[in-house]
Image 1 (cartoon, rainbow, N blue to C red):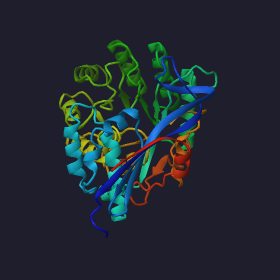
Image 2 (cartoon, one colour):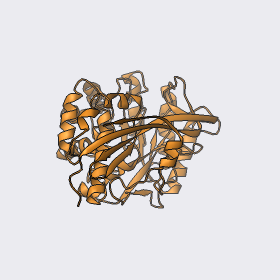
Image 3 (cartoon, rainbow, N blue to C red):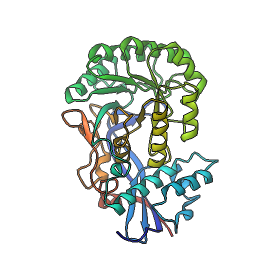
Length: 389
């Protein structure tokens, strides 16, 4: 084993990739199927270099996270890269006035580095529970294209397609600014077509304007036997009182806290009885270190922690959890290809067709995150670079 890895430099590379057949909906916030369009996505790769000659890498984040990173990146230089708990708590305090989203990028890169240092995958370092993760198909938002997700019947057709592919569960992201009757009809159509054959969920992504609309969709979910309802209305998913009231009036369980940051306010959500499942995301929730804390809080309350989003960090975190049900294969559509896989130089894949015949994905088994990034592609599409020493 080499000497302790002391952080010597942090690299931040900005690059882009394109997705065919993808545009935006009425206000430009939701990505939706649009024939002939091409969306350009900008993201970053964080690389933490050490005195031991080992580096940790992670792709993710946007300009706001990288901007926040600049406020404390010099703190990292000279630190022992294995002291993730110390780094987590120091940065958490430093960012007490900010949203802390950048912490996920740093912490995941440090876990990748630790796995390479110990020559083990992250999920093993976390304790290891499983290597196969059942996945649910998590759709793009609804569109208005004749051959897209433009009607309740189209959603039901796609759910049936996903069932035939092996997916054990299906989640609806509905339309932006749609009549609530259309959302209700979609829930009922999907439930009628595949209910009892696969677990069903819906995530309005905080689109509904009123509590009444959330109640209407909740009662439709009750009728269709949905597993959960997630972030229904425009409070942003953060009101404990509103979600507790909704829980009292419907039978369908709620999944909340995607937009609640950190361990303490998520614990408060549970104490307030404002959710049934607890959302956790290693990118949003201060890394794998933060995500593991949140999942264990849920375990202490006897409930499940559902991991948000797709990616190698999500797979390693979920693989170490007993109390988690599904890997979110986000986002998928019958007509939109998954473009993110170009960033990998190995066989790691996410996307509609990334599951096996049993509807599962594997956990990468190599050291750290267990993925190899395509640095040739990243460099060819690089739009910015800075190194901190």
